Length: 134
Image (tube, rainbow, N blue to C red; front, side, top):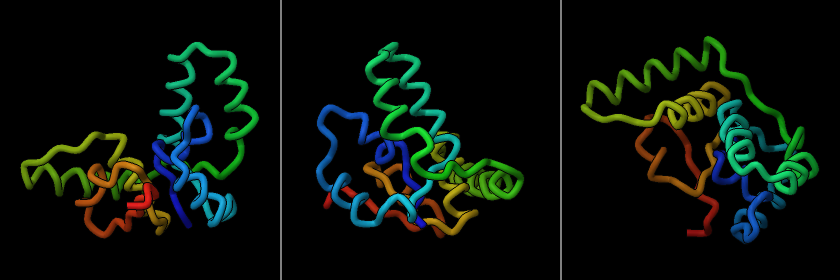
């Protein structure tokens, strides 16, 4: 399974989506994809901030209920806590949402797909794919 990061999941809402993302998502198909509840939250926040009826309508047509949304429960919280402790012990910080998305991918044994590999590449045991074609 592929857990899509917000940078991937939001591509159908973009005026100029990244062609390699569109192609790869079509290749793997919706049945092999899912998102974290945090990804959905980020997209919904963007829609609320945009105050665009057109964008909201597009979301309702092309994204809403398209692929499963994985919850964040105790198993994910435990993985998150271990990840955050790892980074704190090493004097680093990571955005909470990024670690929550990573914890969801790890808990469900998913490959995390993103356009922003640098945000996730140093997370232990996380398998990351970048769909930019690079």
